[in-house]
Image (spheres, one colour):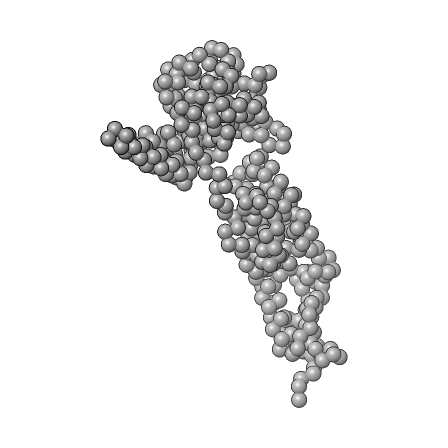
Length: 377
C-alpha cells in the first residue's frame, strides 16, 4: 500500500495533496517558509528536491524563489548596470572610450531584449535567437555585443548568480573576420597624397605613415616631444574622444609609451613644420586645429579624403597610413620585437600581421623582378 503520509526530516517536509501529488516545503536562510514551484509524482521526488535545496544552502548559492516574501528578482538589466559601474581591468576602471562603447552596445543591442529578464531565466536558446537577429549585416558590432553579453553572464556564473553554465554558447559568436583587407599605400601613392594635402597637414600624414603613429598620438604631440638632435619622437600621451569630450591620457599599455625614430629624410620637413605651423612654447601642439587646441578628426578627414582621391586610393582610411608604415618597417627586415617596439604593441599578434603583409609584398616584388627578365628577353 503506497505511503500517503507526509514526513518531516532534518530539513523541510513533504505532504501528499488531495490530487495525489506531493508537495515539498522548507524554511530558508531568510527565515521565511518556501515551497517548491512544482509538485511531484512521488514522495521520493519531493525529498530529492529538498536535498538539492539543502545543498544550495550549504554551498551558499541559495537565492529566495521568485515571489517569495522580501525577495527581489535580479534581472539582467540590474546586474549589467552594476557590472559596468564596477568593472575593473587590471585593477583600473574601464577607459572612457571602452565605457562609452559598452554603454552603446548595452543600450542599443542587449538591454532591449534582456533588460527585464531575470538572470536565471536566460537560456542558450534565448541567446541563440537574440544573436541571430542582432546587428544583422554588421558582423563586428554583432561580435562585440555578443562578447559583452557573454562576459557579463560569465561574471554572473562566477558569482553563483547563475547556477548553471554560461548560457552564451554561440560558437564563434565573439569573433569576426576582417571585412576589408587593408592594402597599404605605395610610395608613389603616399607622395601623391601628401602633395595634395594643405601644408599644415603634410608632416602629419608623413609621420602617420613613416613612423606608424595613431591619430590620437599625433594630435597630442607637442614641441617638447620632438627631439630634432636625435631625430626621435617621445610618445607618452594620446587623445581620445568619448561622450563629446576630449581626453588626454597615457597609452593603454606600457609598450605604448615609446620613443620612435624619425626617418632622416623627414627631418628637414620636421624643422620647417616647427617653424611654420606648430603652436609656440614647449607645450605647444605640433598639429593644432586652425583655431587652436586639439585637431578634430573631421577637420583632418575633409582634406585627407580629397587627397586620397587625387592619389587614386578612395579606399584608403587614415588609420591605413599606420598600416602602411608598419609594412614598410617590416620590409626593412625588422624583427618581431623591433616591430612591437616601434608600433607600441604589447603582444606579438598585431605585429605578426604586418610581417605577413610584408612577406606578401616580397612575393609581389619577386614576381615583378621576373617580369623584368621576361621583357628583356
